[in-house]
Image 1 (cartoon, helix red, strand yellow):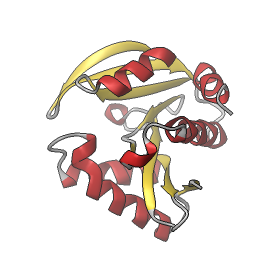
Image 2 (image 1 turned 180 degrees about the horizontal axis):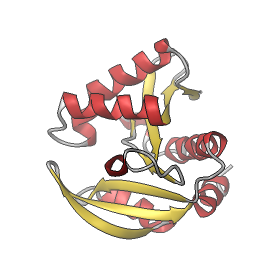
Image 3 (image 1 turned 135 degrees about the vertical axis):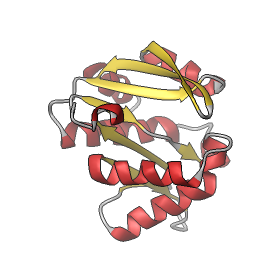
Length: 168
């Protein structure tokens, strides 16, 4: 059975960070350690993260978000931005991904009742995530990054939470 844990203590954040560092280049090819560590810092200060563990208490996945846009100093808390998520291969083809989105949607709502919009960036080359995110949101822009073009999807928070809730 998969268990979801919101990172609330040093042990959980340490496990999240270790898993992220180990899998960062599967998430984004060539992703530098410094960028991943900046992501972790931003989640700790401006958002939240979760780890997924299996029956042996091994971390098998992670997800995160921040409140606000980095380019605006995370001041606009009405926007939640999903961070990099990753699941071990064995857990990708089942409902684990959707369940992870449900956990993040609930945590976003809990941390800030002011969130109006959820943004979801993903590599333009990742056909799986682009296909999924197109089902729940609209692409609002494509940005060039050090790691190639990324599509940014946007949806109202209520629509995001509603989509996630359909699969309970």
